[in-house]
Amino acid sequence: MMSFVGLVLAAGLGKRMKSSLPKALHQVAGQPMIDHVVGTLAKSGASRVITVVGHEGQALQEHLAGRSEIVWQHEQLGTGHAAAQAGPALAGYVGNVVIIPGDVPLLPASSIQNLIEVHEAGGYAATVLTMVLDEPGVYGRVVRDCSGRVSSIVEYCDASDAIRAVREVNTGVYCFDNHQLAGALPLLSNENKQGEYYLTDVISALISQDLPVGAVALDDASEGMGVNSRAQLAAAEQAMRDRKRLALMEEGVTLVDPASTFVDAQVEIGRDTVIMPFTVISGSTSIGQSCNIGPYVQIRDSSVGDRCNIGPFAFLRPGTVLGDRVKVGDFVEVKNSRVGEGTKVPHLSYIGDAVLGSGVNVGAGTITCNYDGVAKHTTVIDNGAFVGANSNLVAPVRVGQNAYIATGSTVTTNVPPEALAIARARQENKDGWAARRRAALAAGTSGTGRTAEAGGTAGTAGDFKAAEDAREEKK
Image (cartoon, rainbow, N blue to C red; front, side):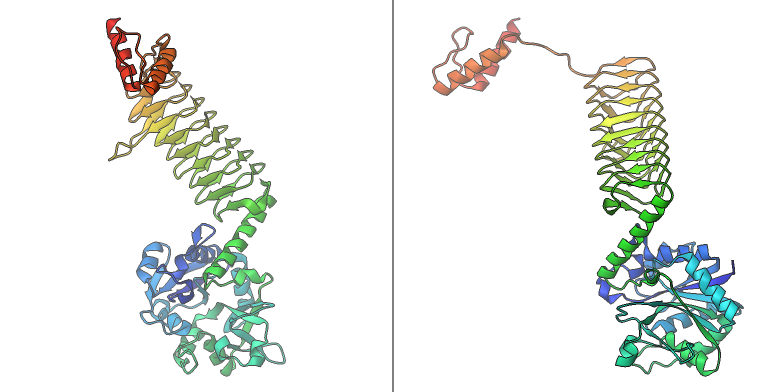
């Protein structure tokens, strides 16, 4: 793998996005576009990554901290001007520079490596990455001479009708010899309809000096897709998700209905796992082998072990870690919690800021009450404990190993191992209460009823309740 410096151009305003967010920070398949680009350069073997920022550049600088050097283009005067701002950072560097826009998220490392290999093998001063489109739109056209060599790249707004008919277009990705790039950038002019300094004019400048310029056409044109509008963002999202779904199926994951399954680019899923329809798996999530997920499940920034069953209608929020053979059933939400091997949370429960051991059974309607209005607190349920249905565990609290929580309990103090905790009001049955209530209600409607107590009047349900209270006091 050949070393090079990656130069990302991300200073543009992105007018067509109509957003206060820098264009390169808009997400595709769960990651900002700039992350896809910077990550691809790193995978391709870049020894350094430099990003040119401008509009809302502070947000990009903070986002890329520790992953890219930053240079500023304080005035947006075109791509050539943007590349020139990196001159001081590249001073003295001998080697290749790959220049790439920050809004080309679909380009894989293999295509960048191929670009560099062709560039090196041909001994070119510059090599352009191109694509052939049936509908080339407003992309800059790659013009070749009669021998097939690149003669120029013409921006759409400056192109004649004849040149606009050309279907081979510029992706905006180049490999330059840094010495040749540094020599050509000062020669650029802004005498064009946009009044900008075009990086594409570097190609013409090199050709005018009889320096060789190469071109590599992508086999898959979708890899070079740029994003300049919300519609193009949606198209890139679709393409990225299609790529991810295909890769998962090729790795042994079953997607029952790929079209209704949404998996972010960085998600990892083990073989023989089955994903049911209408499942969304996002963020930094890993799922083990032989799991059953869905339908209608959402998992974000979580880790799932092998042979787990999740869903339907479950939600794993960030920080969830499930051991092997865990059951998270319908209408269960888990957040920032560790759940041990073989534990079951079958239905209608909320587990937040909790640590559950192995072999725990959580009954329906159980809630870990983790928030006191000021801070979050932890609930610990040790191995083998049994939590009865409709229980509230008020954190901080610990349920000991093999302990039992009686159904309907609100637990506010620790439960010792092997103990039974009962935290609910004692049941009382009042014989004949329903019949007396019906009679009282009927009497209240007619206005003539009397209670069974000492001839008292019971014209309303409230009178009936008072009479019942009196009966209890006499007992």
